[in-house]
Image (cartoon, rainbow, N blue to C red; front, side, top):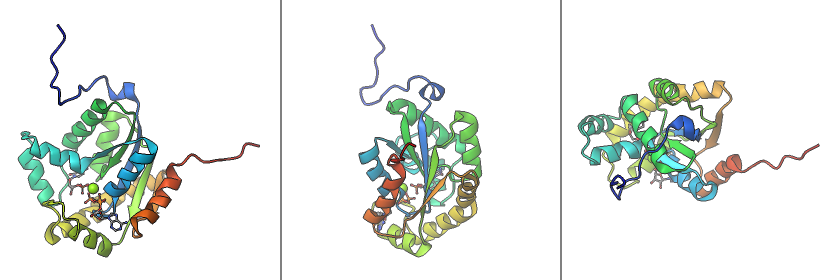
Length: 208
Ligand SMILES: Nc1ncnc2c1ncn2[C@@H]1O[C@H](COP(=O)(O)OP(=O)(O)OP(=O)(O)O)[C@@H](O)[C@H]1O
Ligand SMILES: Nc1ccn([C@H]2C[C@H](O)[C@@H](COP(=O)(O)O)O2)c(=O)n1
Ligand SMILES: [Mg+2]
C-alpha cells in the first residue's frame, strides 16, 4: 500500500537543483507595495508568489518550535536568522510544483543573500525594487488594517532603519551586477503596475 499523505499538505519532491527555478527577488521598504504588485504579476505572468514575511507568520501560527523566536523578532522589526527563512522558502518552492517564483521580502540582509546563494545555488534573474518615500510607506502601513503586530509606529520606525542599514546594501550589491529594475512605487497602484508589466512582458525586438 502507498504511503498515507496528509490531504492538506503537498509533498516536497526532488531537489531545487532538479527544479532549477526562475527566481525574481522583490525588494523595497516596508509598505512599498511588494505584496500588492506581486498579486498582479501572478495573475498575468504565471509566477508563484512567496512572501518571506508570510511564510514566517505561518510558521508562528503552525506552533513550530521556532515560533516564539520568530514572533519576537518580527515585533522588534529584526531579521530572522537566514537558515530558518531559507528552509521555509526551499520547502515552499519544492511543494509548489511551479518553476517560476517571485520571492518577496528576501534577501533582507547580506547574511540572507549569501546563505541563499550558498545553499540553493540559485541566482535571481533580476531584482524588482519598489522605491518609495518613508512618508508614503508610513501612511500605507498605518492604514493597512490587516492586524499585523508590526504595523505600529514604534515597530515601523525600526523596520525602516533595518531597511536602510541592512536591505539597501543588498539592493546595491545586485545593482552593481546590473540586476536591479527600479520602480517608482510612490504612484497609484495601477500606474506602478504599468511599469512592472513592462519589465515582465517579452520584448518585441526586431530581427535584422
Ligand atoms: N501604490 C499604492 N498606493 C497606495 N496604497 C498602496 C499602494 N500599493 C499598496 N498600497 C497599500 O499599502 C499597504 C501596504 O502594501 P503591501 O502590503 O503591498 O506592501 P509590502 O511592501 O508588501 O509591505 P510589507 O513589507 O510590510 O509586507 C496595503 O494596505 C496596500 O493596499
Ligand atoms: N527575509 C526576511 C523577511 C521578513 N522577515 C521578518 C522581519 C520583517 O519585519 C517581517 C515582516 O516581513 P514583510 O511581510 O514586511 O516582508 O518578517 C525576516 O526576518 N526575514
Ligand atoms: Mg508584504
